[in-house]
Length: 331
Image 1 (cartoon, rainbow, N blue to C red):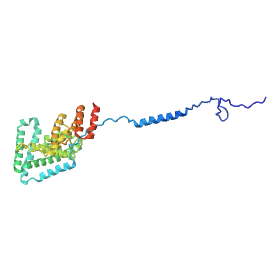
Image 2 (image 1 turned 45 degrees about the vertical axis):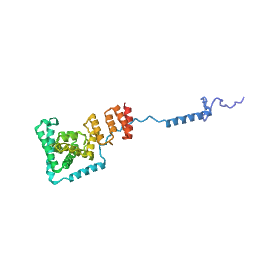
Image 3 (image 1 turned 90 degrees about the vertical axis):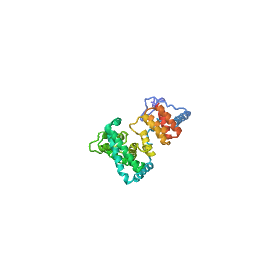
Image 4 (image 1 turned 180 degrees about the horizontal axis):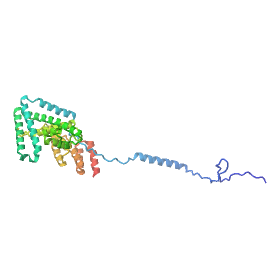
């Protein structure tokens, strides 16, 4: 009987080049055709949902910087020009009286620092220095009018400002904070000269926080001049009507700085001054600034009420809205 040729069984799949495989055939599952459409539609729906639905909302951000105290360039130029006009109006015959008044002012400040503000009324030499200052300013006003006293205040403000700028630069070069440097100035230094001329006033200026970055900018320089001039005018108590007030723009500058940026003032005092400032300048964003001050102190419930009032008054709308959301997120 002839041998018949061998063939692979039907349940075997020949996958080898030279012969049959011993592995069983793997079945291939083919899904129903309609299932492809359903699957694709589901994938598109998931993708669309991921695109259309927003992700987690960003946390509210606060805007707590305050710089309303800083005058604009135009405002600063107007103040400087007004001072220059006042200085230019002085008469030569009253200049010796101005020089004497400024010397008396610096002598009194030096005595004030030596004695201490709390003991001035008990110190005989301090009382004499004060009386001499008041008498000198009275004689200056009699000779040249109130504007002569104002001009002397401006002159002294500018002179002290120059020494303050140099003192701050000196402390930065020495690698010391200005308040520490001026509290114990090296002998013969510019800062020692500042203390000799301005006494406790120089130390008070350092405590405000200006010059912390090692320099005095244009706004801070104008502020120093205004603070010194204000202190000078306060001593003119013998003038008819009392001591002359600084111009309203200088008073606003001083008040706004004390409210917003003075490093040594407590919150309660800032809020008191804020009321006086809003009376002087009704356009000042009182509620917004109060909200910022309260936020910095962690008093979020009170800050919320002030930001709500700020929005109602139309003060700093975008910042008030952002800060309101932020304080509410912090409660």
